[in-house]
Amino acid sequence: MPTHEFLSAEWIVAALEIRDEFAERADITLPEISINLIVSDVPFGDGSATASIDTSSGSTIPQVGTLDFADATVILDYRTAHALLVGRDPQAAMLAFMSGSIRVEGDLAKLLALQQLEAPQVAESVVAEAHLRVLEITAPLD
Image (cartoon, rainbow, N blue to C red; front, top):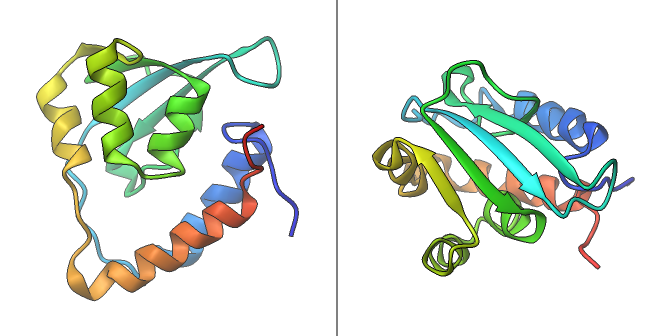
């Protein structure tokens, strides 16, 4: 199976395909939040990337580019973004926030509500399977 650099256009397309494949099997209600991501130290392009997450679409998969109106903007480095969005590591988020590696502008309460989200028990296996598929398409970090 081909792998793609996290946040590359190819990775986003592949991740959205996985989301679509699992969407009907995982019945999860997401809190509504729109987030812009500004990611530094990206290993492709000009070294930075912008992306956005709008949970009203039923997904937390980032899209390329930013939203005109977002509840929050999160500024972070590539490795931290990878740990949060691919590794799903909430401890990494807390450590990065406390150390200043993550800066948040906007509604921090909404952002924290998204971090506390857990899948209903009936959907846990579906979410775990979808996450494994995302891991399979994601190139490892150097």
